Length: 93
Image (cartoon, rainbow, N blue to C red; front, side):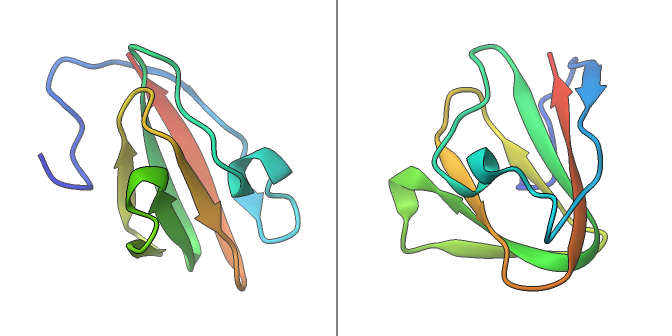
């Protein structure tokens, strides 16, 4: 499994609204986690953002337009917004 692939057998449950650099909720910029049993997938539509897992704070992954970042259940993380971006988060179970 790579940063862009979900485990087999999951089904999409819901997708957030599309956020941009001004509408990104404060909670996404702070440490948080997806619920147990739920996988997240961040999808960047335009621009780019930084994605950081809290257990590897020195590793910031830049996710650019067309890329995805899989978020395992209960693994704390946050996003870093430093310019124009449009993105959404899917939740799979």
